[in-house]
Image (cartoon, rainbow, N blue to C red; front, side, top):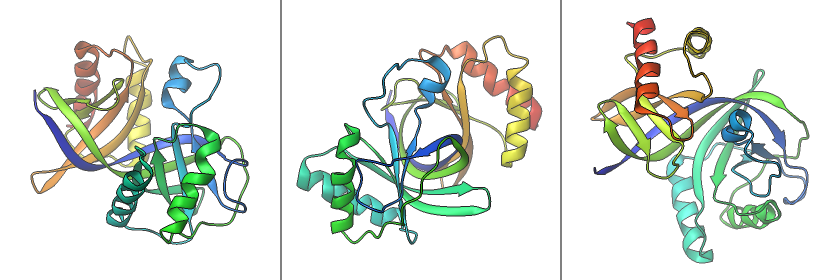
Length: 230
């Protein structure tokens, strides 16, 4: 089964916190919680950041973020995954660099410094807890197609992607997701929406997070959305 590398976008809704220590002084850093923790209570102690956003004063292109992240990885022997992101908080839009692969919270400031040395200009510090936002992330996906229209992440064992037939607004997605979760035997999974850029076009997808998700469950989720959208 060949692994495909695709470019796409994921839109998630999360309650985020700011990082108030272990960062460069007077900079704006966001901690995005692990969806596994929300749904499965797997962690009693958070010792490793899962997804960190460095909020920047101005937008940075996906190309620039990829190039700079690759340079940092090679220079400092790291394995960072950098992506372009936009955070919508009420009526505000924040631009940032989403970084995965930071091993410990106390390393955040040093990683920031590497990006700063490459010309990144960070937004001024803000402080809040458990604030609900929409996050749009442009990124690469390494996936294995396990069934037609159903993919398993090659990098994250508990992450799957399923194709759906058409675009949904965020409000429509939320409404349909609530209806479907109330009418399915196992609703204990995290779900977000997104797209893959495939064959010179866009394929609408849903990201499902669930440890050891069965093919039966993934097909059921997919079919429920198809029934609602067609």
